[in-house]
Image (cartoon, rainbow, N blue to C red):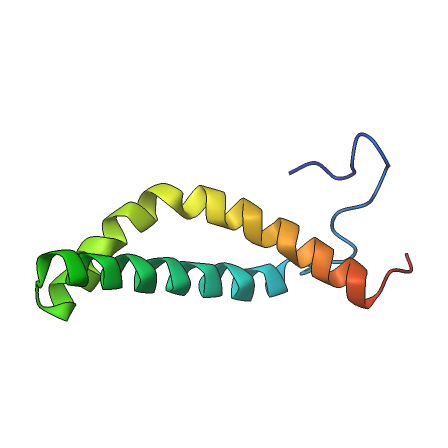
Length: 86
C-alpha cells in the first residue's frame, strides 16, 4: 500500500496499528458476504444450511483481496469522518 495519496498527499496510516479497525470492517464484510450467499444457495437448492455455508466460503476466498482493500478504504473514510484533523 502506498504511504501517501499521489493526488492530495494524504498520509494513509496515521500511526502503527492504524488499520486494526479495518480488520473488524473486513470481518463484517466477509460475514455479510457469506451470509447472503449461503441464504441464496439455500433458497435456490434447499441444501442443508451447513452445506450452503461451507460452499459459500469458496467464493469468499476469491473476493478476499477485494474485501481487504475495501475495508481499508472504508476505515479511512470512517476515521476522517470522526477525526478530520491531521
